[in-house]
Amino acid sequence: MAIIEPEFMELTQELDIEAFWEENARCHEFTTAKPRCALSFSPDDHWLFEFLQVPSTIRYYQDKAYRDELHRQANAITLQYVGQAFFDEDTWEHAPRRIENLFGCEFRYTEGATPWLTPVTDDPTEFASILDQAERTDLRTWSLPDEYLEEWERRRAEGKPLPLLGTGSRGPATIMTSVIEPTTFLLWCYDYPDLVARFRDILAEKMIEHNLILRAFSGNDQPGWWITDDNCALFSPSLYRKYCFPVLQRVLEVLAPGNARRYQHSDSAMAHLLDQQYELGIREVNYGPEIDVALIREKMPDAYIYGHMPPLLLRNGSPTEIRQRVIDDFRKAGATGGLCVTTAGSLAAGTGVGRMRYFMWVVQNECRYQ
Image 1 (cartoon, rainbow, N blue to C red):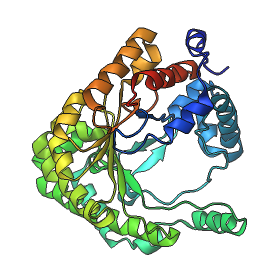
Image 2: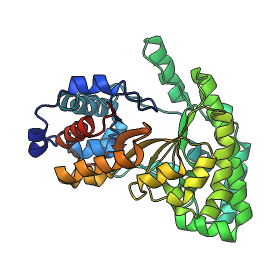
Image 3: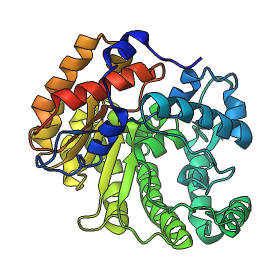
């Protein structure tokens, strides 16, 4: 059974979802010359598993037909109650390699969980050899596995849409602390700074090379870059400046030059890094709920903010609490027109379509410019 909260369904009987999304399409520009703030949702695999009470997460990741059917079920429900479909119903079986794979980091699958990248070593000597191998690897033949190329050609021959590749990735902090266990990596920053600096420099150049290959292959000539970097919160300002900032600076200057889109998501407490994020030219953000949205607006006056509802508040809060939070965020960050109301992070697992509808209803009524 899907999660459909009766109390919130009762509160939103008068919500016209078709009219809501029609108006919403006119609300995304950074201006007050629009009806209201835009709203968006970001349900992911965690959310899907709880929403549909999925019996096998391993099967979801390994069985395309099963995965596509679950997506169809979820989309049918959200279309009925929320007016949007969020999941691809013809998913890919294969994918390009990830930059973490270049350093020996691979996914581990366990029942009841999402895939987890497994650290490769805690031995600095072994890791130096891994970096040697990464430097030698020819990404022109490595980036696109044969099975992915075959699936691409099959889909192309069938006239199916093909994605534009090389649009973004996880950020350097999360990449580094996936390849090397976080505590170990942070200790290495002090104990083996030259090794970590070498990792940083190889990562930056290989990220650029890898994604230029993906862009050329898929015909993607659109500049811009998105970043997901939850683990940046683990880095002090000085460590971030030394080991993460240079990676992003190099990647962004090549893949998102000039005024191209630069977006970062990090649903963690990384307020101590806002100044450096702004210096990097990041102007679209979705930060963690621990950060006051007023501080984001102060530090990043011309950034378009996606937020700032705490995901667990939307999932667990009362109607009054949810409504007041939307009003407060609009007052703090929406006055200039640069706020899209959404959760500060992904939609929390356990959030049902009733609460999603109520979120829509509150934004429609409390975040208006006209």
